[in-house]
Length: 341
Ligand SMILES: *[C@@H]1O[C@H](CO)[C@@H](O)[C@H](O)[C@H]1NC(C)=O
Image (cartoon, rainbow, N blue to C red; front, side, top):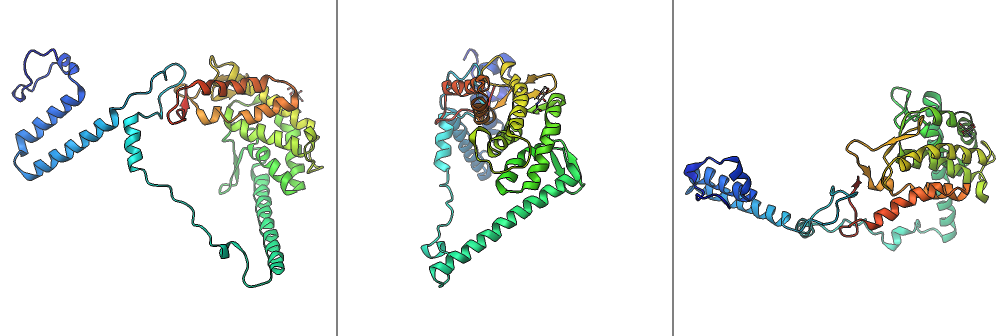
């Protein structure tokens, strides 16, 4: 310390330069101890109790902030979500074991109630068929509400009976529900959703504004690719004869992804920006320059599959750069931070 005078309570005047030279915790320590305790309560038991509480708190802070800061995490990575050794040691100490689901006894696992195995199986099959029908009925009910009040919008607002575009306006419900409808054999819905895609989706893709790369990839691109595969494209299962030809889904998927690709190509790094403006194919990061790690590292499924079925490597090439980059980042217990700049 450069101060020529010993620190004294009588001289409760710091000039700023001196203050900055002191270790922060020392200043806090001395200030709090001397101000609150020496002056008012030294000698009274409340005072002693407060000293103990204070010291315990400081010890906790020192323990949790004393560990080394992970190095080499500058550059593209940032430190949000990382933790130092001291803190994780402390947290581990307090961590409760995870709650496990209750285990069924062998008796409860069987659906049996004293009947023969065969009757049992028949009952069980009937029960599951009824349950499966209930799920399908619920799906058809939800679709009919959406179709009546919100067709073409991203979502149905069920109380106000209206549609809202919360995901950029590409009819997210329609495309997101399409593969479910195909798998359930809800052919009327497949026909309705499929013809909407064929008639409207490419036009919307070329006109709409900002969409989130991740949401649009998993719902709209993922829905189109699933519909392509499940309606017979790529030698996939042909679960439906309704809706447009598989090639329409594929072409629409390419029309969309050619624009989404700007999130990758506009970024100066291997990490794509979080948002794309569809009509002019521009892209920008979210507020603060961050992209979500889980978002940028999960779109590879759709981008790789699109490259596979279209024969055009560019989608896969861009998406896989993200994973290559994440491999090189410093990790804490195998994990990278939840945001990436
Ligand atoms: C894809 O976009 C092009 C250009 O906007 C358009 O002509 C074509 O019809 C679109 N494809 C489909 C399947 O909608």
